[in-house]
Length: 295
Image 1 (cartoon, helix red, strand yellow):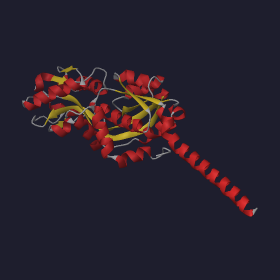
Image 2 (cartoon, one colour):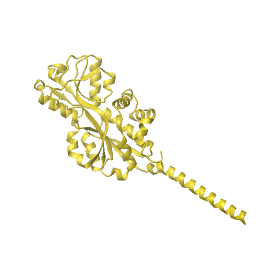
Image 3 (spheres, helix red, strand yellow):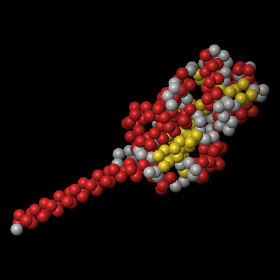
Image 4 (cartoon, helix red, strand yellow):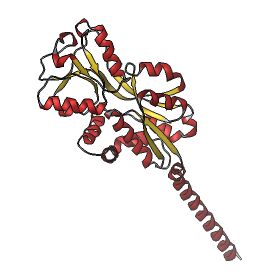
């Protein structure tokens, strides 16, 4: 009789153990599976820095199982898209100066997760072979033309203000183009040792491949050093709490960003450069995903 009872007990315990193991396995596998059906859309502006950063954080989210869509938009539309919920997030907000107008207009409809990169700057940039060191020193250089990027960009607006503020720039012109066109013109002029003045910002790979410097700005038209912030739509924390946490944790250095940008400038696709950086920096990525269950 005792042997019969013992056999029944062993059988029951075995069933319970298998059930518990199955439950544990199911819970573990559910973490990435649940994310695999969740979509997240990241908006970005077509600046080299934002192409790089958005592809990196997008790759991290994709590795977690999310269906990630990266959408390139004009600057103002990017802000509007996140503010209205058409996009979920962006890691491209330059504050407090460059995007001050957009933040004033849309900030109350956004959630600011804080700084993802410190030490950003904007201003007028020249090759170091030019003797000029300050905006106040400009006279006839580069045919009195500053080559800019897209109309509406913060650095373009600041340059327009500089032309109106500095008396020696009253006859100067700003020619807008695009980030890519500006960089190509700068590279061509640099190769020929010609005078050129461009609207610049850092982080940017051009500072790793050319000897450049910012012109001093004694009237502080371009403002002090800036930070790049991560902004998300209202409700993202409730809808996609783990993605929200990764975006909240996202933080890296100027050197990190410029490495990805340099790889892209040398022929890698943004996706390839992001994949390479993520694989090579697993420890840093782990600090972004440390709060995610099932990892």
